[in-house]
Amino acid sequence: MHSTKPEQNAPHIPVLLPQVLSCFHDPGEGVLIDCTLGYAGHSAALLRAHPDLRLVGIDRDPEALEFSARRLESFGDRVRLVRGSFSEVLPGLLAQEPIVGVLADFGVSSLQLDEQRRGFAFESDRLDMRMDPEGSLSAYEVVNDYSLERLEYIFREYGEIRQARRLAEAVVSRRSPTPIQSAKALAEIARGILPKGGKIHPATLMFQAIRIEVNDELGEIERLLDALEAAQPPGAIVGLITFHSLEDRLVKNRFRAWSRDCNCPPEAMRCTCGGGHALGKSLTRKPLSANGEEIRANPRSRSAKLRCFYFHDRKDDG
Ligand SMILES: C[S@@+](CC[C@H](N)C(=O)[O-])C[C@H]1O[C@@H](n2cnc3c(N)ncnc32)[C@H](O)[C@@H]1O
Image (cartoon, rainbow, N blue to C red; front, top):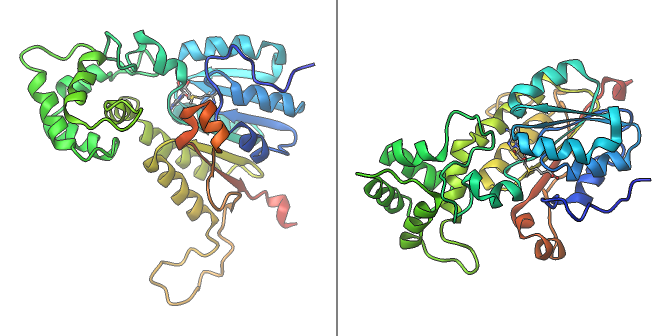
């Protein structure tokens, strides 16, 4: 018998777990795709809760997949793991399988952030930040090769840093004649420019911005939404957890467009299309977020937002 408690030794606490379980409370029989398997906290809980559920878990981090293969071993052939980015893997899966759910918990795992050698941590001697260790772009190239203007853009847009220009100038001036070699050296630059906000390290937003660029995190979400829009998996529930306002906006706008019954142009005075164009309905009018207790236990959950969408099943109509 599987316990319903998350394992104590898991290196990552799944965020919004009760909300995820309630989003997928009645998935029926079929396949749920966990696009960001990580350490399988969400996946293990969903498999335990629904004995008829099968799971395909995707991750581009081979270390996460290795851990999760062991963690999910007891579920036997109900589980299949795939290495790759979800934007590449998902379209094929949506075409093959009877999909009942699609879950994604975007961003990095606690273990990726903490492991010194992955170069995400402020004290790291490396400058890497790739979720996929074979990815073509690392933080080293972003920091040492990008133009002043591009760095400023990334800091402003992805980091929402007000001092983006000054920070970009400081990076450009520090990187010659000797390139910036470590996350530690980069964090030092931020410390000189950005204000310290309470317990939050001043480099936090800068590292977040670089990480989003290195892993093309926003592009990945856009392509995931495109794949879902193209497939419109009938009867499937989609639950997406974001950690950044830009990510949440992508999800919110797409769910809103998918819920729209009328597809007349916005300037039309009255509806002439006859309606009936909604692909499904949003299950969360406002995003679900963590309560105080969860935030105290897992500060990473502070900015997590879960939105859920249900794709109509043609059977619903008749
Ligand atoms: C926040 S963690 C997921 C944690 C997981 N829900 C759990 O309960 O353990 C995000 C995971 O998704 C992976 N990931 C992020 N973006 C990805 C992408 N575009 N394609 C595949 N995997 C991705 C990361 O490597 C990381 O392991």
